[in-house]
Image 1 (spheres, rainbow, N blue to C red):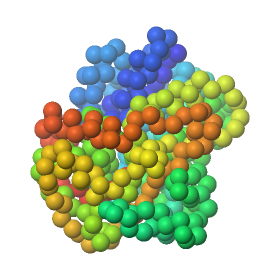
Image 2 (cartoon, helix red, strand yellow):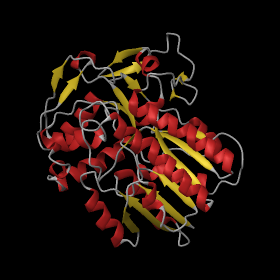
Image 3 (spheres, one colour):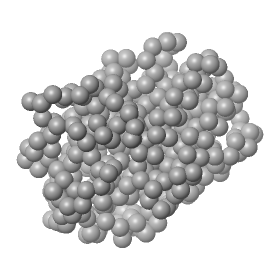
Length: 366
């Protein structure tokens, strides 16, 4: 089986590539990356050392895919993954659309040409910002907790946000590109008769992630805390109550492997993939864990309210559990221990992320 990974030198792409390469002797992995993200070259060297073929290519250019060998499966892990993409001054809205929608189009054409299956990595950011800001929460200790004493909107329960939660605009420019890519992928699969799976991923984290304030926040916060860089709790009273759940890429890889080996032609094709309520923690709670590893380091309070910041996002992945008997196996503390160990052994990591060590960690919304 030949598995192609677009965005193979990113954190998630490289993690998936290594996992699949080790999963079975009958699997060979190859991929492409435009090497634009800081740290990509490090991952390229590591991947090549394990026998994974890595080529320099940009999925925005259809011609870059023309001479690639045919795969059995295509994993679309190539995207600009920041909710601020297109509005933060670092990338334009056109660049965002070219990356996240145009790139998926070219990869779908590549899959169609070779009769390959298609695995799209989407995001929790396809869910409605307006609906998410109205999620009823109450303060419990140092975090927000879902207020189940109030009426909950469709698709929301104590388990988190399900696939039935509203995707009505606005969802951010980033979220809209991924939602459009989902629809396009499903249409291609139906029209041209090849299997397509869509996985809406929550926050991912693990050792080796080049975290920034906008994406990879768990890794960023851990490394910045260890390095005593300025940290801030922004919005929600400046207390760090906002909550996210976290998933290790190994658990994502296990689900993709189940999808690849699934023999059913029909059924649901869109799944939430997150750590769930057991792997959820507030930013203040994450700081407490960091304090235990590296000593106290107090973030500054910043009461600014910003349109993309949300109080509580926990992914309900029960549909994936019911369909594939899948559930996360890496508990929260295990993931955080892995990040802490990496921070201790790699004090230079933030500098490798293109000097981002000087930036405050302003987000908990990726």
